[in-house]
Length: 152
Image 1 (cartoon, rainbow, N blue to C red):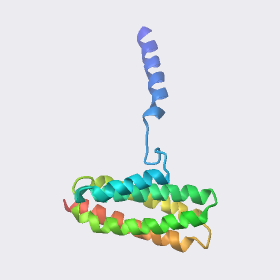
Image 2: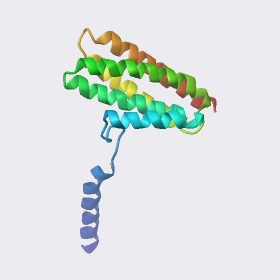
Image 3: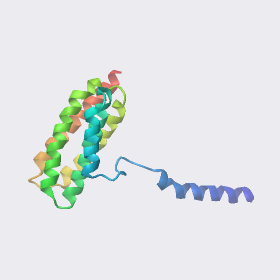
Image 4: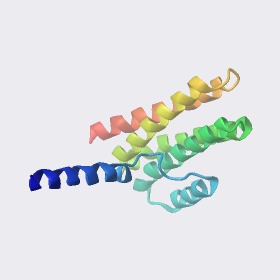
């Protein structure tokens, strides 16, 4: 009987602590200041670290763009999508040099593409071409990173 009580208490505590341990890509608060700090870090980073940092910048810009779009600020959201396209190009250039966090960058880009796909389905007709183009570029960068992971 005492064993069952201890087991039940252990399970209760474990289940209560589970949400505190769980995390995802979207748990961090994202704002323009955080993105600017990442940009500054990417400028001085070693070439082997830049791909992951660019992927992190693209992800955070995507999340901020989604929030701005949901808040009704399509102008700022569109500007961020154009900026995402610029950083996606930098990812293309840095993928061959990255050997440290390439798998993490690929996973982050996959999640970013998923979020952009959500945005595509919820966006207005006027915004869809820009979102679709951004999604295409992010997906291409994710595929390129994935292929580089499998080459190693």
